[in-house]
Length: 353
Image (cartoon, rainbow, N blue to C red; front, top):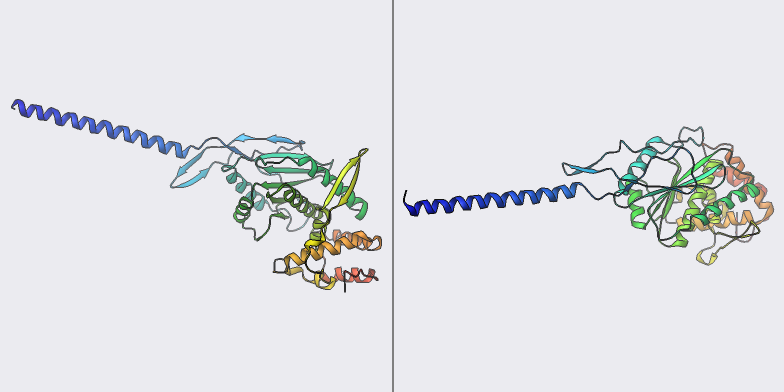
């Protein structure tokens, strides 16, 4: 082989070696990128709920690693505990284990996008609120706790209703209306145009943050729904919505370790006169229709009227106790109407039969 040919051969060998080196480097860089994608930074998940109620204790833990298989994210959930189940009533349908598990899995997946904390607030010896939420730009848990404690006292004083066993509410707070809607949609809950709800069959309440005042009132509204469920069971929509709308307006301050409370009602937002009692009581299946806002306003006005007047308040008390005797089913609309009409002789001008 001539010297010229040997020189060309050497050049070819060098070029081949360079190509092999470059290819190897590119392969390693692509492998590093893939590894980065499949191993996200450490975030947080929900830990198993402690068996004992702990006042305002925060529980945070590192998330389990996500692995990518066939373009689907697979989450290892073996280390996660389950939310404790407590049947509220001995009914065929109260707290559904499958729904609770569905909520747990949904919150776990959501926690990959935003860290979630768990805090359990002991309201009194019988009621605790387990709050599951990301870090929010406000800290008002103490105000919420005191308002719920005050509402419990008023329920006992006005209606003769009090908890008889230990209960724990589950409250999920979400940082925006969009994140709230995403979680609700994932749970297949049909609740259009809402910013909060209480899902009785799972014992979970959900609320979206828009403003501090809005979130506080939404939380109180949904927790009153939970209280109503614990105290009387299933009930008519106008009754439970009216009570929730009424008590979400409660304000208080302390004087010598006593609550001084008032209700901040703004009736100017109600553009139409309230529905007649007949219409309100018998429109049980229309709450998700176009009359929704009018029904809410009318339910608030009727409950407000029944609470305000001493004689009428006894009617509301009897309605609640009658409903509590059958917690697994709600009373018929005719039963509500008859009990009201039999005992209410002189109606306010705001209401007509």
